[in-house]
Amino acid sequence: MALTMYRLSVPTFVHGFGVLGKLLDKAEAHANETGLSLDDLVNARLTADMLPLSGQVQRASDTSKGTIARLTDLQVPSFPDEEKTFSDLRERIAKTVAFLETVRLADLDGSETREVTLNFTKLKMTLSGEDYLLKFVLPNFYFHLTTAYDILRHKGVPVGKADFISLS
Amino acid sequence: MALTMYRLSVPTFVHGFGVLGKLLDKAEAHANETGLSLDDLVNARLTADMLPLSGQVQRASDTSKGTIARLTDLQVPSFPDEEKTFSDLRERIAKTVAFLETVRLADLDGSETREVTLNFTKLKMTLSGEDYLLKFVLPNFYFHLTTAYDILRHKGVPVGKADFISLS
Image (cartoon, each protein chain N blue to C red):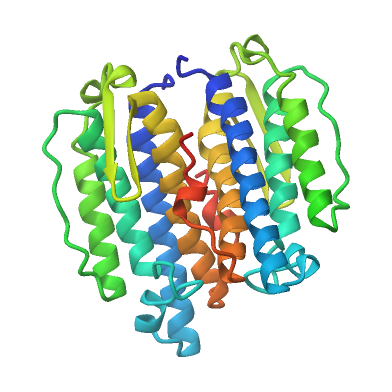
């Protein structure tokens, strides 16, 4: 597959959500074995003013959907941040992946040069689609995946680097 | 700049090390203000069997150098993992960036299809240069950057997402 805006976004996200799903599986197995509360794990965070595990999954979902919203003309679904259980988190991931799988290579044609305007509270700027994908989306997506992993490690879930870097 | 193997690797790494350097600046300023020990911060980790801050910087450095070693015919410097202070960490970053800045666009020409063999203790496989870059290098590089950030947040350093996603 060539290095295209599509290749760098959609398959990257789908692969990443696969990794996230497997991390949740290991967390659930660990909780079942040790009696650790799954609800506590959903709300676990590294420090008081960082998002908990649920927030990391929600922001990874939104980062991927936002990419498609900004780089294509497709209609993108909105998912409220109401996940409270592991089952809810899995459903959020499944809904996100189901949407991503509707995106076609051609939908992102020419998006390298598309003008993207970011309008977050703390970040307002206009940049090219390529800069948006490389400098904003990918760091952001991997940030939330890694922080989900880091939260699980911090809570004692026996996941390792090989669970994060999944090459199968 | 087009979506090339070079664009996705060298400028991504150099930008990432710039972010890492600024995170270290904020950590040092915070330590100076609060009396938090910088040496403790260098050795801080999220859980006993994860790498400390120093290890995250070292692995980010090695991930970037290993990319050039595997995707080009260039001679890549070896840096021993001996960093013990913030000043050492900054020097490791500076040496890594100085090396990366010697890499030219043409050095990575055709590396999409180059055969890459990974020979880590827990991961032995052969894959294309493109798969190596997208499925191994980028997740790995951002993993170590994010975990460095997460360690600092966990230790109370007042960094925020805007320090991580730096678009300037």
